Each structure stands twice: as C-alpha cells, then as structure tokens.
Length: 212
Image (cartoon, rainbow, N blue to C red; front, side):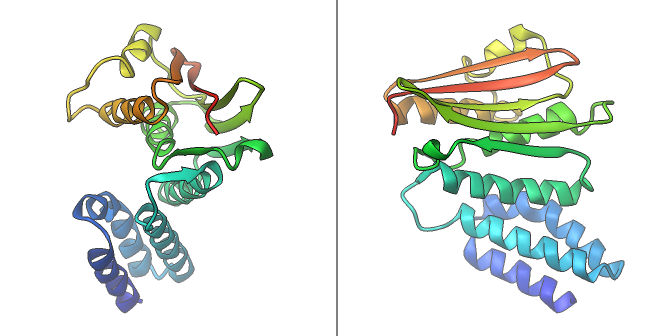
C-alpha cells in the first residue's frame, strides 16, 4: 500500500499544477497515516476520492460547466473534507432538476463551501453542524444558496467580502475572485449577497438574471 501511495503522489505531480498539488498535501498526509495505521480500506477510499477530485479539477473543458458538473466537483471536495474531519458535519443538497443544465464558471461554489466549513462550522461549539447547497429558478432568474449553521459574523463584515479587493493572504480573497469572475461571465447580471448573524450562521445568495 505504500507503493499505492507513492503512485498517487507521482500521478499528482504529472497531472496537475503545483498550486493544486500543494492544496492536496494535507489529504496525502492523512492517507499516509491511514496506511501506517493499517486502515487499508479507508486509505484506498480517500486516495480514490482525491484522484477523482483532482481529475475533475483539471479536466479538459472550457472553464464553463453545467451546474450538475459543478455539483459533482463540489461533492468530491466535500467527501474529502468529511474524511479529513471524520464526518463532523452534514452536507445537504437541494438542486432542482431544471437548473442542472444551467452553466456556471468552474470552481464557483467550492470557495464558498470551503469558507463555510473552515470559518463557519468545523470549529464552532455546536453539536449539529450543517452546510446546505440549494439551486432553483423562476421565470426571471436562477438562484443558488450556500448556507451553514456555524459561527456567523457581523453583517458589516459579510457586506465587505464581495465588495472590497482583499489581501492575498486573507481567506476571503478566493471569494472576491469568484465574485469578479461571475461579474465578467454574466456581464454584471449576477447579484451576490452574504447574510450572516453571529452564532446563527451564514447564507450566500446568488441570483443570475436570465442566465441559462
């Protein structure tokens, strides 16, 4: 199984950019300790999830994907996080069928879910920790919500996340990047609001006007 782990590392070096490889190192470390503890099935499952996640991340596409494909990538990321944090949170999706073919820039949802996990629910004191992704549409727009029941933040702080250019070292830089990509992709037809309340949670609300 050490050879399997080595093969996984070599495959990563050959197949992905250094940036994503560095992002995958925490998972490689977990797999290593699983192997050393003789948790063979767990290590094999997590290596498979990591391989699947990286394959989706660097597939040969235009950078614009269907919502169904974006959710597949997001689910692969969440499964890795559930393995890493021993299923300490619940992941719920409600994706209406008529939104699955709507198109969206790749990696739009993952930074929001990552923030919800790392800064919202994983280190809060609540017993039941939950992150939910919803998608629906009406006659005028397509809507996506990402909601967690974590620590939350002052509404004034939430309002600044998408509006200000953040420092490269701040966690909200990835969110700012997503907001800018969506603004360009939709020609300013996307509205993003972040609603938060301390000790209650945070909800990211996206509204895509006439985007199909």
